[in-house]
Length: 294
Image (tube, rainbow, N blue to C red):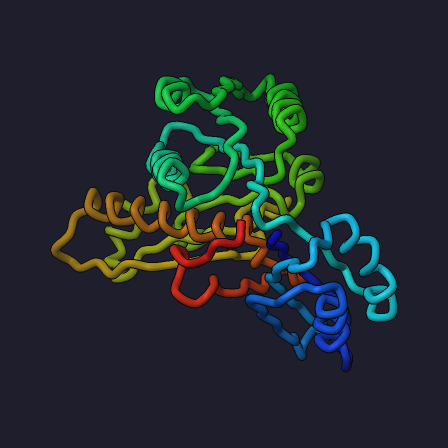
């Protein structure tokens, strides 16, 4: 039996859930998990349905036959094959903790993705990437060649069929054009100190100010630097007895975990853009290990 995911967003009104469940039941599909959210402030309704096709109905037929159901509700909807692995392009500069974490989770199956390549403006992680049998693309970026470098990155992403770009501590600002072209398909990770602690060494600034919580934020990239819709966040408690170096170590661990959870939510189609915010449905009961969709 094939497994699929249906995602829906539309103006809120009566009858949406009934229409969807009836449609799936009439086509011999069995719902295995479902989540929904009605945003009373924006008047938008969001729903994610995981289901099995028990009578052999395929993806194309599901998409085609659903159109008359979706039209009266003005639904934005997509059907996904839950067994298909999303094609992901990773980008990194000289901090490798997030890249290493993603590669490890990918290798053990905790992140069921297809890594189509790694782009870097430095050569630090070339050997690591190549040893994983993943294409490595060195694209140097300078003040003079930035437009050409970004065009090359887009060429790499397009030729590989990239569905998601992950900035795993890639320390270059993307142009507005690229942000708009890949809207909702680029995830970035940064310290939660921003914008409170700007600059090259936010952990040192946090240490000097005596903060008690440090953290990280994963968000979709937009033309507004570090202000895109937030997908995932977490914090760790620190004390006066720890050093700035301790802050860095703890912070990197939080960054890696937060980025991984954000990727996991996106590839399982649990994230929905909701204006400048997001709706993120939780994983299936039991946590990540039990979520087999995708």
